[in-house]
Image 1: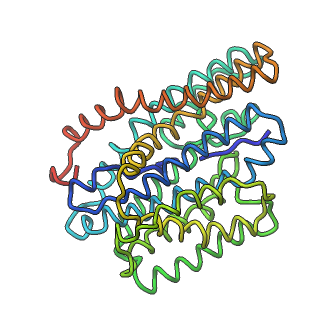
Image 2 (image 1 turned 180 degrees about the vertical axis):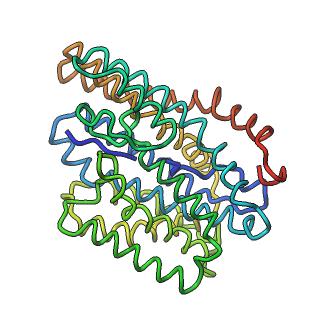
Length: 377
């Protein structure tokens, strides 16, 4: 049974927070709503994959993995929105890396810890699985490094939490952005985008879709999948035509992205290439232009706030509960109830972790990490 993504973050993919508003940068409420919906779709995709019959998977799953690509477009967009001016004003790559560390790493550790419980439990009940391999997988996951330590048993780059393949690329691309953003402008950016779009087409050609990156051996080729969405997000934000909070209809992009990600049309390289190269970027642009509209703003902000905790934590929860259902030999009705419980537990865990762990830890790190200037924290 195939399992895939995310983001992450966080992007990771869910990397944006409410911090920019306090620093004179227009807050993009529409992207928070889109980020929250994409994270919820990822959760449901994995629940459907592990808990439901094949007919349900055929309806829900053909394109849900494109949420990863959506995360990377939003990540690039938000990086340019929040940090272009700061980097021009003197923020160093080191300060930027520290900022990304305090934003991403606390939940990475939480996701690794939860994944370690699942992975070590798997080793204890599965004959022939060496505990040393599980420990290596946990350490590699904490360092965001792919590993083949458990390839014979769990053929994933990040067996401790398979969603972390995209978080690893999120970190790589963000640091690359800080180091090279000043050079990727004008014609150089357009030329790079054309080459990156060619990479997406090459990857999708002759394949049933762009569902790659999480399996052993796919981490390298997945660069061709993620670099275009990230760069096109930066490009769209830098266009002079972009004006935040401009359109009253910008929120329509959120249900539209839901339709792109969840529909019964069969997966194909053509569908995915068109979605990633054109449709998803245009919808992210539209969502970013959404004018604030209470009370939806509060819901969108909450969804965006919980998107990264949900992304980082949900997969080990899904695996643990799915294995519990198998161990107890649940019938179809009981399994369906367990699937709904998995969604509730994942959402609850995301909210609780954000309140009691992620938010206070990041506040502490903001005060104690060695930023060159407090304003960069």
